[in-house]
Image (cartoon, rainbow, N blue to C red; front, side, top):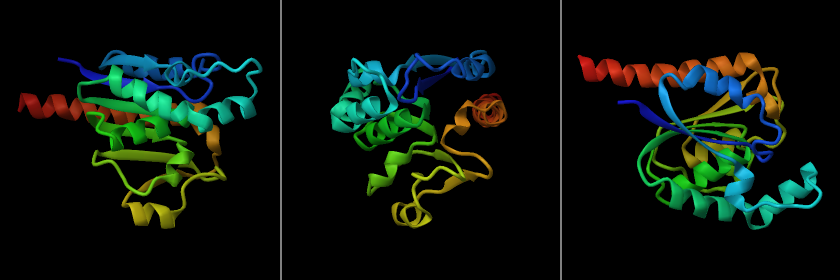
Length: 183
């Protein structure tokens, strides 16, 4: 039986997400993938879709709406792969009881505002030059490890090298589960 992987986009949703096809290319053979567009989850519909306007819409209630929608839509345990705002949504949903087997979150900078951690295995990945990444002090206080990738910024998740490394880690996770079941 194939493991389920829930993928949650960054704030741009499917509109600027051609890079996400690379993740699907690596993972679709081994995971049953469900994709959620952040903007749809958050009910984001801004007339002028600038980065500033979309970000403001998420901060002004869109993240909370997206968390509530995710909790309604996903009721069975699954693995999660989430990008930027999507990572924040997944993290907060896990804190509110979303059944989660694991969370791989890339560039979820707004989790730095949380004061607790979900009790799930997590891989929190950030580019070294991401100015809004959580601090090491925050990570120690909350009890998480940050995986900081040298020489990258916030959008590292769109880079083919990072995509292949993240996918390899996710594939190792699912193939270890299969190996354990066989043995």
